[in-house]
Amino acid sequence: MVCATSDQDSDPSSTTSNRSVSHKHLCDMAAEFNTKLNDASDTLMQHLKDSTTTKVEHKHLKIESKLASIKLTACLS
View 1: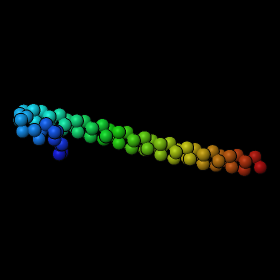
View 2: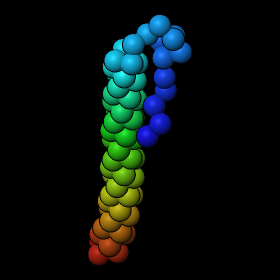
View 3: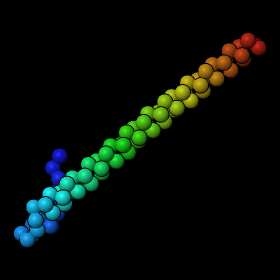
View 4: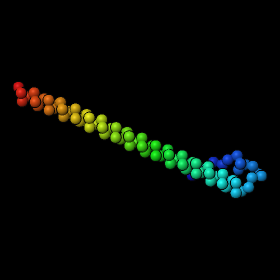
């Protein structure tokens, strides 16, 4: 992963240690952001999958109900 550098990195009077700590902090923030984004994406995909499954099951039950109604009507006739 490529991590951004801070303005402090361009300051010639800053120490290498400060630049290293700043760079690590930005990398950690980027990694945390990516992790949160991936988690949100996974959650959304699971929600969409669950929603689609629910819609399919609902449609299946409606068809079964209509079929049962037709059979009952036929038996009563």
